[in-house]
Amino acid sequence: MLTLQNVNAGYNGIDVVYNISLNVKEGENLCIIGPNGCGKTTLIKAISGIIPHDGIIKIDGIDINNMKREQVAEKIAVMAQISTVYFSYSIYETVLLGRYLHMKGRTFKEPSLKDKEYTDKCLKAVGLYNIKYKQINTLSGGQLQRVYLARTLVQEPRIILLDEPTNHLDLKHQTELIDFLRDWSKCKGHSVIGVMHDLNLAIKLSDNMLVLDNGNMAAYGNTNKIISSNLLNDVYDMNVTEYMIDSLRQWEAYDSYYNKSKLRKVN
Image 1 (spheres, rainbow, N blue to C red):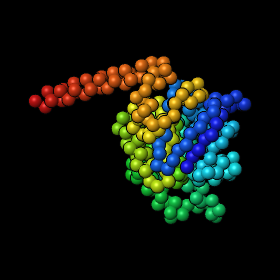
Image 2: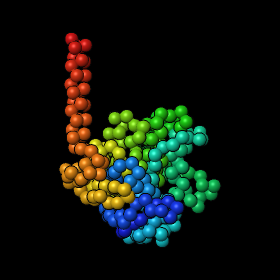
Image 3: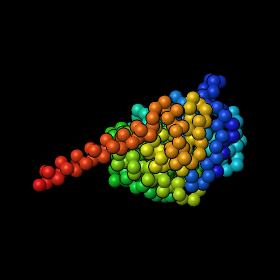
Image 4: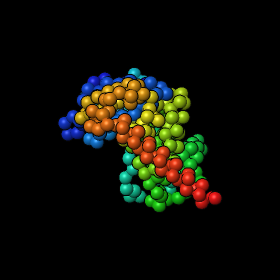
């Protein structure tokens, strides 16, 4: 489905990621992890064709350098980190923008009944249908994140590229988003590739992991094998396992205290 062979990419002629090779199959989810500045977002930009690269990137066996921009967009949709909103569209209008490729060649690019129905379907999937006419500059960060997810889905891509998709989301919506993406990727012909900082969410989403360190591949393979190794300790320069276990213990202690407090109030 997606193949990278010896890919280098960066900015202004200076590479940030080096010699990246991987293969993502249909139905497979890949998470890209690593410290800040290691090249995760740069790699996502190279895969989507936003920045140039050396080496080979193929989608369904076709080199993206031999594809037109709209052909790449028909295969891949990018959900980037949200930024300040400088315009005031409704949720519905913003999501409908993702149908642009499907409206190509139509007079004045008027949305068809299918465009409108599919937009509503995606809004329902992310729980925004009931407020679809609300202006996006009035939304919370979590709501806005779900708007951009719906706009990504409405494009009908085969591959979704995510750059920190759970930013601005509370715990409930983080979990719902990851569950939704896992279900979506199991549909025929779909895959998700995500840049993640939260290792717990990365484990929950991914089948395989790519670990970057200073732009290089520190590891690539099965998520469980990578997490169970000591490699992440070296990459993050800390005891990752101990940190995750300690966080879990703190959460369990808080959860236990919270439940006992609730019980005392009831009694």
